[in-house]
Amino acid sequence: GEQVEQLPSILRVQEGSSASINCTYENSASNYFPWYKQEPGENPKLIIDIRSNMERKQTQGLIVLLDKKAKRFSLHITDTQPGDSAMYFCAASTSGGNYKPTFGKGTSLVVHP
Amino acid sequence: DPKIIQKPKYLVAVTGSEKILICEQYLGHNAMYWYRQSAKKPLEFMFSYSYQKLMDNQTASSRFQPQSSKKNHLDLQITALKPDDSATYFCASSQEPGLSNERLFFGHGTKLSVL
Image (cartoon, rainbow over all chains, first blue to last red; front, top):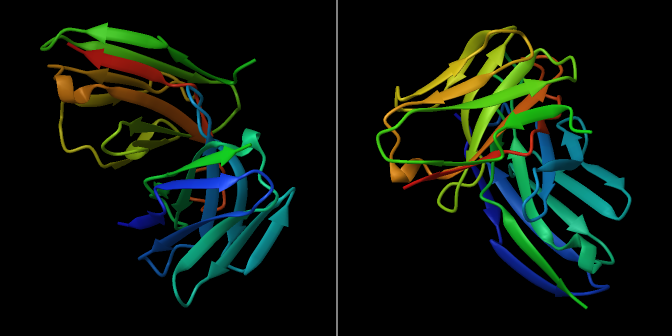
């Protein structure tokens, strides 16, 4: 199966600065990498994803980078706001019948005003 | 208006009892999943179902049994409950099984506390 490592586990930043979360995976066949945001007491929600045929994707203040050689992908949040404070989870998955996205352990992002 | 309904939202049970967690999705999806979230293991994959058939089971204990009476239902029966089973159980769905670039939609979870 897949193993996903996510760092850091806790990230504190000042409002307006950028925040970066890094994940690594083991299975070179993994080809889809979504990111989920989970606010306290809520369910995880997809915020951005990237497929293995891309190296970079950007949307609404979020940037995802993928380095297939290094089996590493990262989420960068630019101009952080207090509303960005939440748990963030990366995941990796592989096409095939047994589709089961494997999640990292999460990063608690705290944006200080 | 939630499209994935999980019942109940909160559940308290005594050790040794049996409970059923309900999940229904109204997204027209063909694949459904159960994940468990606790402080020890955030978002841990448990089961995946495709067209009402079990695709993958990563749960070591047979005390956890998924049940699918309809394509849009995937309930989770837990027997002989233990305090370690305390967690939030999330049901999720995706459009089609086996496609890697399919986003998961999560229900709001059932928070289970075993005393």
